[in-house]
Structure formats: C-alpha cells, structure tokens
Image (tube, rainbow, N blue to C red; front, side, top):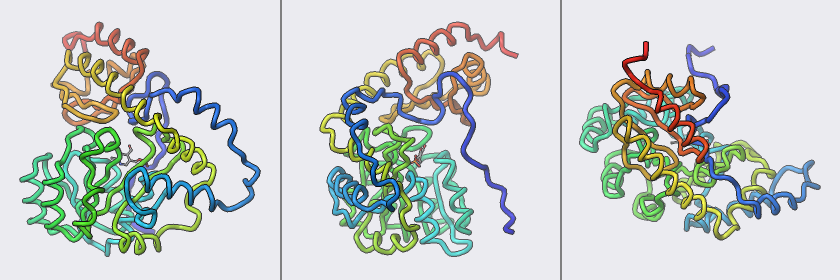
Length: 334
Ligand SMILES: Cc1ncc(COP(=O)(O)O)c(C=O)c1O
C-alpha cells in the first residue's frame, strides 16, 4: 500500500441551511419539473450512448467549441482526476495559489505528483512561484474558490506562456462568461479548461463536469477516461436543462439579486469580497467564533483561515442568518 493520508468524501450534512458546499439554492422552475417527468427510461438496461452524444452537442454549442474538444466526467472532480493522472509523472510539481480548491492537492497526490502553493492570490507571487518551482502544471480556479477573485484573461495568457500546462477550473464562470479562457483556446495549445453543471446550472446531484481543450489534447485525455463513466440518466436530465432557452439566465438573475442582499447583510460583520459566483467570501477578525455561532443557529458556512465562505441561500436562509447575527456579540462568546 502507498503511504497516503487523504480526507475521505462524501462529507455528512448537519441539519439546517447548507451554505457550505456552494450548491445552487435556486428553485428549479415548475416547467422543468414537468419536462423531467416526461423522460423515458425504457433503456435502463443499456450502456448509455445517445443521450451522451446529445449532451456533447448541446454543451459544445453552449460554450462555443466543437464536440471533439470536450470530455465529460462525473463532475469536474473526475476531470481534475483525469488531467492529473494523464499529465503527471512521479514527483512532478503542481502549483496552485493559496487559497484555492481543496481537492487539487488530493488529486495531485493520487497521481503521484507533488502539490505546492503560492502564498496568496497576487499575480506577481504566482509568477515568482512558477519561476521557483518550475511546475509541470499550474492548476487554479477562476473565479477563485473560496474568495471569488477573478484572474484576468491577460494574466492567464501570460501564465500559460510560462508553464507546460495551465488548467483553469471555471466551475463558477457561467456567472461571468466573458472571463472564460475557452474563446482563447486557439491561441494556447497548452490550456485546459474545466467546467461543471453543479454550480450555475444547479445540478450538483447530476454529477456532470467537462474538460474543454484543443482537439489534440482532448484526444490524448480521452484515453484516460473509463468507458461509460457518466450515466445516461444524468445526461438526459442535463439535456432538458441545456435545451431550455431561459433557465440559465433565470438562475443567474436570481443569484445576482440574492448576492446583493447577502452582500449587504454580510458587510455588517466583515469585509465582503466582490465576486460573481454563487458564494461570497467575508474576511473576519475571528472567523472561528462567527462560524460556530452561525452553525449553532443551523446556518452552515465554510470556515476559512481568514473568514467564512457563504453560499448564496434563499430568502429563508437570509432571514435566519439575519436573526442569528442579531444575537451575535463577540464579547459574549467563549
Ligand atoms: C473550484 C471547483 N472546482 C471543482 C468543483 C467540483 O465540482 P463538481 O465535481 O461537482 O463538478 C468544485 C465544487 O465545489 C469547485 O468549487
């Protein structure tokens, strides 16, 4: 056995408002419930082909590439797994900023690589780390999870020229599509973009994520994907959402409205970082105390080293949080 000590998922959920996993809280419109109820499942005994071909066509059209530039997986998590397995040799270095998505070091370790992090989120610090560590892979989320910081196309283009491979995890980019690297892939044959239906599309339970890259790299990575890695049932569900002409716009508009409300509320306790995602990051003097006060009141946020990350919740979650914050007084905490 290998000597590894990695966290085991899935996590268990406490009861109350789950604002700690960046799951969409936008309620699925009734018209889509009706369409989902008409899906035919007479083919459950078959390995899936047709709904997945359709998914490739629909998602490629959505992001503006050819279907052969795509890979699909069980969440973008599987795509991180594939990209690290396919590119890393033992001890190859993967560099990410700090903070960034917690699964990058895990998948790097599984792929026998070595994960290192830049201190902070400044472009200059990242460039210095690239020079220092000479990573095989620069792997970062854009917008950044947990802070929502957006790396610009100019910064990412500069970074792409400095490393063998740049992986841009665009899990939250549907909220700000102009910032995507996808329309620049022609200029960067070493850039790999990861996307997901778990966030703006609100389909975390459907478990579908994508890799978008050049045709050549996509053909290479396809060798590392297990056969029939995604369910045709999931693909059928996703196709319903992808073919609805207004669903995504409605989801994005709902998030924009809730973001304003959450931002005003959270500004009463700390410094809210500007972000276009389905979460907000608040820098706090005493993150542990406020995180546990909210948790005691059934509001579960993500505790970070300098603050908390809060998924944009419903009006009910907002109200519950408002009430909990009324009883918040740092001096009365243990
Ligand atoms: C930055 C980032 N990447 C990837 C994922 C994984 O998403 P999924 O596997 O559901 O597509 C998440 C989920 O929180 C995330 O925040």
